[in-house]
Length: 149
Image 1 (cartoon, rainbow, N blue to C red):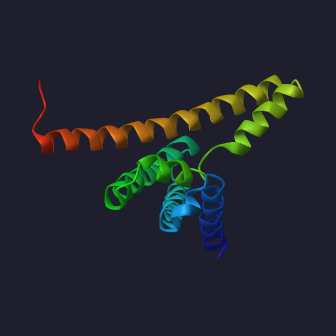
Image 2 (cartoon, helix red, strand yellow):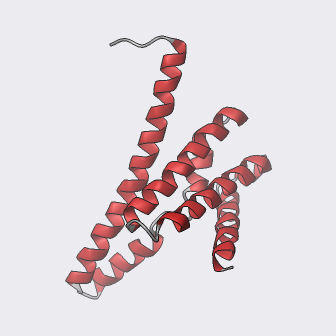
């Protein structure tokens, strides 16, 4: 039951975030982007019992980025709309807060641990987006048969 509430919260959080970014002008885009965020959170919840936090975030962001690229093609809209809103539940906001808190309180061990965890998560998110967008660009190039080796 708790996971269902978390997934609905991820959807509603993404929807609110979509309104902040004025995606509400195209309500279907906001709803689709929020569904992408919820899917990412579902993947995170499924993977976290078995893998590390960073790898779980990587897997979740790959799903969000795949969903975003597919929706961008279907809706004929930029993938950025769906990615930015969809990554909202996965972004390490708590980690950033804790890192700064440990820095200010001069707790060097916790600061470094939190810093590496937060930076690792951020790099995992960026890597997932890079992998998926590169994959789609390669597919597009192959379809156009305009590639040079």
